[in-house]
Length: 415
Ligand SMILES: [Zn+2]
Image (cartoon, rainbow, N blue to C red; front, top):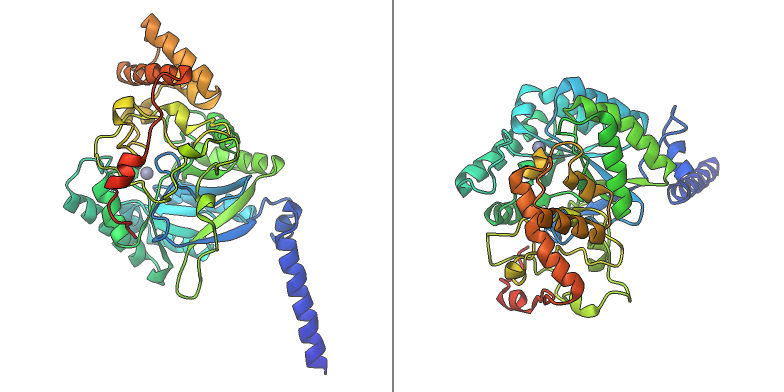
């Protein structure tokens, strides 16, 4: 009798607890003992890497099926005790679960750092053996050795190697089809991101905070790319988290599906950053969801405006150079220049604060005047190259990319 009343009471507490989990942001903080003001983690998203092998709109068509104002925090290049431990403490104080992409060499040098991440309940994926920025052009056997070295040393550091998530982020986002195909053939999900905060550049921590928030606000949700080996990231993180809470954002923890943990049910459309609405002409949306394999290896340079500030009515698919419009279905490898833009340059401005149309106008004016300013010559050329087609598109003179050709040529769906 006593036993059954206890169990009824326990059940009602569980019901109440589950109710709180889906209630208000304040409820998440209530689950963070000793930190009543914590942001908390609002839910766990279980993903099946084989069903959605490439994610992150910086480079791919699909991204995580997040709801508006949901954010996934990711940290690359650790563990490096000096900074990774501070990041861990900040996340612990906020009861936030994140995803870490580990470098094999770092795991080898600091296996305890990997175990700490796992013990704290974070998701741990890998990021190559020693972070070469040449995945887009290295022989595939070298790429495989890099991938496997990272996996080997990271899992070797774990008490239970099955804790390693089949998630991989290519160093520098230097994507290549062969690399992606290899990862996918092994059931490993390729993680790009939805926006970076440029914390690997020589910028202030305040700039990192500003970029994180500006770029998140432009997309409304998504995967934030950070690095747990940078002092500026450690300094910016508490401010980012405070602001996320103030702006009503919620943290989502992502884990891989396993035999006992089925993937969270989702609709294919939820894996697009901005699902089609009645305002979007239906012809712009392919009816076959997984057509992203392009027939070419040479992809166009990125239009930085595509990475940010996309109004909700626009297709998340990249605008691309006219000549390659029919063959390139994934976004390109970010140009190295992307990682070396001087602070305060026009492109930073374009990528963060202006609408696409304003960005296009400014870029066209830049190109017309021949003004180089602080922009590196090569990146200036890239911007100018995009300005013309973009301007033509705006006048309706350039044809819309059509997917029919690539759909016909599409290889069998790769799982
Ligand atoms: Zn990295």
